[in-house]
Amino acid sequence: MKKTLVCLAAMTLGATLSWAPSVLSAELKAKPEQKYALLMSHMDNEFTIQLSGAVKDKAKELDAKLTVFDARNEIAKQISQVETAVTQGYTGILIEPVAVDGLGPALGAAKKAGIGVINLNQKVSDTSVIDSYVGANPVEGGQIEMEFIAKAIGGKGNVAFLLGPLGSDAQIGRTQGYENVLKNYPDIKVVYKQTANWRTDQALKLTENWLQTGTELAAVVSNNDDMALGAVKAAKDAQLIGKIKIAGLDAAPNALAAVKNGTMDATVSQNTIEQGLMGMEALVKLANGEKIEPVITVPHALITKENVAKFMK
Amino acid sequence: MSERRRGTYGRGQFFQDFGLILIFLAVVGVLVVLSPDAFARPANLIGIIKQASINGVLAMGMTFVIISGGIDLSVGSIVAFTGVVAASFAHPDEYPLALAIVAPMLLGALIGAVNGASVAYGGIPSFIVTLASMIVFRGAALITSDGSPVFGVSDAFEEIAGGFVAGYLPYLPIYFIVVAGLSAFVLKATVFGRRVYAIGGNATAAAVSGINVKATLTGVYMISGALAGLAGLLLASRTVSGSPTAGEGYELNAIAAVIIGGVSMTGGVGRWYGPVIGALLIAVIGNGLDILNVSSYYQLVIQGLIIYFAVLADIKGKAGR
Image (cartoon, rainbow over all chains, first blue to last red; front, side):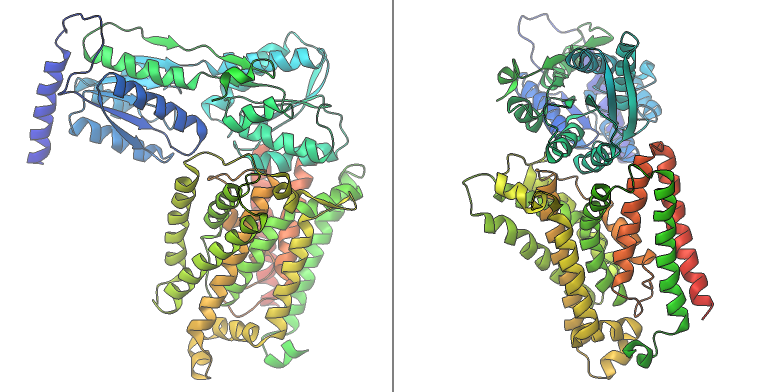
């Protein structure tokens, strides 16, 4: 207990010092006494790997001391990690939340303790506990994807949606984007709309079953790339590649490869790397007393066969 | 008849098997009526067996473990880990294809051997041992793959599970049929199989009667591990990638197939074909609900209820003995 108090005191002192307005310099650098925490929801897929990688790169560039915490998709774990960051006297927290709700009290306590809090990618529902949000708008991503498909199938026909885990922020936002676009295309009918929980194997099974019904599908629109690749495999087995348009979202490397070889029609990049770079930069700016915008939006980009080479490493 | 002499099976068992087959036929019947054009098509029926195959392979391994009186929670993670390994070895022109095929099964058997030895020689409950290895090998899958799916596998690798006999019959069910056939043979016609039943029925009595309980149990978990490795290979080939998050919850699906199939959780009792029907039933329900375009929310409720009632019918069947 005593130790915690000492830590808290040291942390408050440290925070106070670091919040003193810095001398404006052309080059942004973190101070040696500052330490930063990156709190990731998980580290299990291409997206989170890319995002945390970009944050680490930026931290290195800015000489910022960065510790990465992995919540393994457990909200309770992420809450304790926020609390740890507070007791350990971190200067600033960059958080990619496990869920939009539930982190309010923990982040509020961090903010009260004078720690800079920047929310990355998925936006928490209570924005009063964060200093800034850096991310892409999932609705916009869904709109870009659906707009591409709508044009590719000539504005008419049956489409199926592969959804992410029901109730997740990305699933809701991206699907909302699809529906926004479809208001302008009355001749496109959504015949199936089921979750495959971001998984390739589940999407494969689901698409196989849809194709068995004999309902003619003009396109499969997927909330992410892994599921779109399941649909690609099902279409390939049924010798329907080219006949069914398939699009995903995330610009994962395996999807880029599929777009390049023509088995998948499009993916949408939420500029993951840009989000990571901008998030870390905003955090250091905040810690150095610079003013930052409460919402920093990173735009999406459509990737098709024409421009895919640009996005491949 | 030999079962009757062993005294483990009787009239109750007859009703139990009869009940299971009846439930299966009833579900199929209902779906045929509800969806005569889509569900009952031959191509769809073959598709269902295809979709049951990977779970079926896992369920056969799980059958050995559950009959021996244990449980194996690690199979889902082994699927992910060996799938990643298989896909890593399957990049075109890097390694011989045989390595991508043999390595997953060998690794699976090795992990199973460690599980089994910890249960048999270490005396740790199987639930704990395999829970630990479930966590360890999920981690190993993430480490090996660096957290993202391994892709870019060769066409020959994709053929392993994705190929067709005569351009029509998929390969995948063949693995299931072969594994089910071999499992049936081992359980019914070998000394090893009889020992597994004896250990599950009463391990102390089995040891007193001269059975090497420890070696047999190690073998049981090795079978489950090796089959999980095979499932990992098949899933990686089917999805044309090795994903570290694949196979999550597969252990529960396999356990569900075994339990629906009337194998007793307390060990010592169960027939080889129960889990085969169990795996088929789970696939039939999933396929039927997708085809009928039942909302994802309701699918979960329906799937849970069917497992519940299948087991309830099973228990009632036994009570009628």
